[in-house]
Image (cartoon, rainbow, N blue to C red):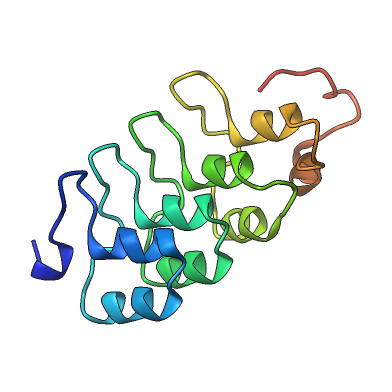
Amino acid sequence: MNHIDAQDRQGRTPLHVAALNGDLAEVRSLLAAGADADLGDRSGFTPLHFAAQEYRSDVALALINAGADVNHVNVFGNTPLFVAVFNSRGRGDVIQLLRSCGANPLCENRSGQTPFGLARLIANYDVIQYFADLESPDSGSADR
């Protein structure tokens, strides 16, 4: 493992921390120095999971451009897209970015929930609009 990928007790690297803090300049610097964009912490969260959590589309794009896996699952079975939907508060830029880069909206987590299904459950924000291509007139009550 590269020294740039040194992990703390939680298994987080400086790239995890930079992504969590939304520090695009530091993310770019660490990636340029050879940081692993796909290294998971002890719970399997990658820097892309943290960029999605903090709703930083600029950081997410830098990580994706560096080869981050948009469908990486953590120990809960959640992908960055699931994390983005959960934390969206109605915003769609990270959801749209991840989907345009091949994130699977139907990837089930360990509880059997998908990003698409979660979007349908979030009633206080119109998150389902970012999955309109998956909705059909007769799928209004389908569970996913």
